[in-house]
Image (cartoon, rainbow over all chains, first blue to last red; front, top):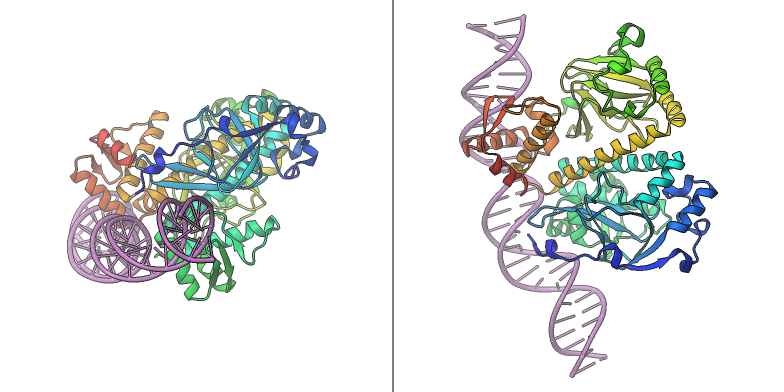
Length: 251
Length: 251
DNA sequence: CGTTAGCTTGATTTTCATCAATACTCGTGG
DNA sequence: CCACGAGTATTGATGAAAATCAAGCTAACG
């Protein structure tokens, strides 16, 4: 098992390239995710206060946003790109607990520290707030907590589905479920699904599905041989037989 | 794999023994969990409205409360006992996604149907509300959503910890983590930890940890042989070497 | 007691991880 | 433009962990 990951130094949020609200020239009304993010339910008053408080953060692929154990000072909404959340065992074994897509948020913590690692999967931009500012706005805008509750509950539902996958599915079922889930999300975001782009490495897929990269690779070639998918490029998948894929995903 | 589970008919919430608010004679102030449950943050006014709306449900061990796909009409707070939440694959493979203890709630759904199965692990009593009633109270009492958010977030954190266990831990590590977690929860609830009671069967433990009952059993005896634990009874565990157990749990 | 459900133990098989080598991709510099 | 090298992916051979198959055992209950 690769121990180097535990030693990898991740950038702290503070060291990322940053554009503040006044120079970014962006307003919430123009924001790419303003209809989907937690702030979509806020009125103009609250929104204009958020505008004063936000900072735009730009990450490059593989940049770290925060690590497990860091002070949970900030709360982020993803504007573009994708991030991964992960947890590590002391010996470096890694489990990716989820991918975070535009409109979704990161960094809502229980106590005062983050409970997982967040890293950019692709180049990404985020909208950052101080947790304390956000709490203040939340107290004055009850609809915000309601919205955060709905979004958190949705994430919890996904987490439980993923627990079924991790605990009870075999490798081919895991891969099939993964591809279908990815396709659904791409379709929902009006991104091409034919072929489908894999924005993450084999290592990321393995650590998401509780497998090794070798098993991921072997399972892809197995599906290829069986004419269920084809792989025009290493990070593009063409689904050739959707019925077969769905049959696999269902167990 | 045992297919019989998918055919098992579970009682619907409607068929459970029920005591309504007037005959139960219970008031929120006297409730065993009134300092811990979601309703702890409500003022006297809201509480007295809840009193009018609640119904006490009593379950016996192994009774079903609801199944995945049922209309999500009700929301429940556990007053006593414990329940399990689970998800099934079509062929009967089961993953237990969590145990629900007194003070915690069940049945907050995304859409209009439940996304998992809820069954009593032990005899249990619950406080039941109509989701629609609760939503009304919530709109008038913003602190309720804030409380539900905190509790849901806490459950999500547990779920992610469990994903690390399911995806990356070996059987002995899973069992050790499980025992430590159980001990912490028992200690937090002022229940005896010496020996520690296992309120669930080997099958439940297996389906919670993503193992088979045979592997659970073998791992227990392995820990016993290694003098890490002893098993005075099938459902009591005595931790003999806490250091060794914690070392295992950490990987 | 006898029966049954739940638990343990043993033998064998399967799946996936590990170890090891090879190929592909892409960027860099000769 | 091609050679080189690093990182990533694939493929192959082997091994280990856990599942499966199959008896027994134990404890609880009529």
